[in-house]
Image 1 (cartoon, one colour):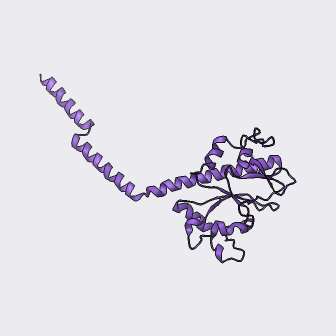
Image 2 (cartoon, helix red, strand yellow):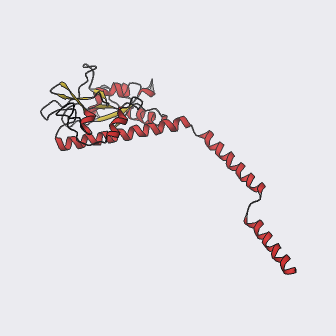
Image 3 (cartoon, helix red, strand yellow):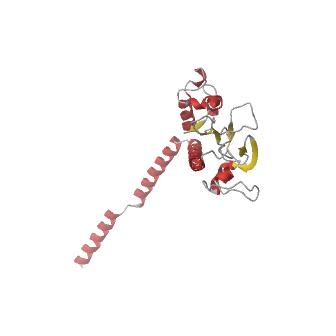
Length: 230
């Protein structure tokens, strides 16, 4: 009998030491709830959402630049040009007097000696469309899902620029939505408005023609500045 009592007493004390009481659990849950509220109040959810969108836009810009570089390396000319002998400058059909800073979507067409073709550049980089145009053969540098996503009217517009000069780089730009990416654009623009050629200290010389579009909001409307890759 005494042995049984001792065994029950031992098991009861072990059970008490191994677990939490209901009151202790409620205290722990309350502390965790307070910490969660404190963390959420310190984080701006809108900024986090916008930063995620900007990160996606940067990733899309990187993929597009990579596809263009691969196409150019293999073909010897850019995808917006129809043959190597054509002018490599981008065409701005909506504003011919403005620099060739065009939107990357399904209305961005390849040109043949300055004449617009029926072959969208994104289609040319992707699967092609020989049913509409015999010569619109796709290079399969990007997936169809990629071209669909960046052409969607609800996605952040991407803009592309290449001066057409020998050795000039290709740039893909977008207008950021988050404060973090706006600060990045502002840092690169620097004092763009105060220099002679309109190019800030962080902008390459071959971006001089589009400095007004990229850094036009510097000092006045920061949200109008653009992030450009590379």
